[in-house]
Length: 98
Image 1 (cartoon, rainbow, N blue to C red):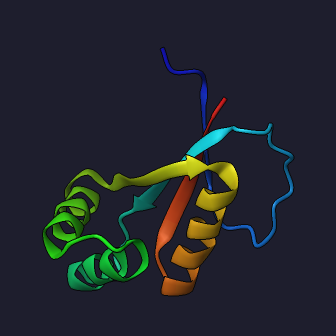
Image 2: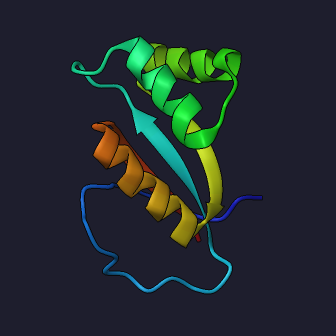
């Protein structure tokens, strides 16, 4: 059974919450009207190392469902990925599993 999930938009440039050691998180990428589908897939390939097919599948999930869970790991790693998505111009959310 999964614990409570807290979803907050990632728009901050610093971490202002202390997290318990070992706490896990996931990165959601949100659909937006600005970035092209090809660009989003390219970011997934470049930053996360996904194959073209996997990047396309995730991009289509973002496009059709409004968001997609892209990766998961430690809170610190996911926050770094979220900051990177900001530099690419993508909107993301960090979902911390408590």
